Length: 309
Image (tube, rainbow, N blue to C red):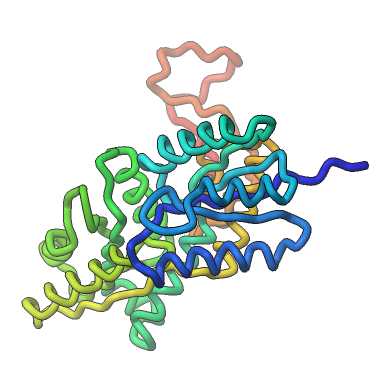
């Protein structure tokens, strides 16, 4: 008899917004429908039902002994780094005999960046289609915001990856809470950089109180600056790319294949404008300043050969 695969436990932030909580629960149900052989359950760390503990209990009652937990979160902040591991440790005490592995947060994955690009296209309508149009567009990517500087830096990383190879004038970053710059300051900054058209893009999975706040603050700023064209883009939403990515994180967690930043590695993934790099063999890279100790006995005559030659 073969051992069944570990179940999938989805851990969410939680929100006071009923529509946002329902979007999460819908998403978990859809994952279950797509993978009928896999027990799937999901719960929240705070603010909305069901709590994560109930989701674990539901799996245990279905006979599950092993599961992989995937945080349904774009960035690894306090929740993904601390609260979820603590909650899982507590569940292990409550249900002796269960074992679990823990996956990593979702972003900034190329599949999600392509959804973000789609959201920008939708917000721009027919006026954002050509390369010349894009060169006029400055994007303000707005993250949740955290007291964890590493989490905020992850949003900047997503912004940079979204900018690379797509032809926007720039992708700036702001936060809706706990971190500067806030949305109005972010918009001011775009203008100081010469932005003519701005699209505010919420870096959020589902609708909720914080994405709504982003849109309200954007509309308030736009009303006070009629000379600047400002549009609001939609959240990522329960797209097929998101469903597939959660399963990719599940597989990684199950196989113990937790990698460094290979998602956005130009040698593994075709990123816009860098498609020719995929699968390139990696060469040792000698720099002219390398104190002259070339262990392989060949000297490159003063200039380094990069992979691109």
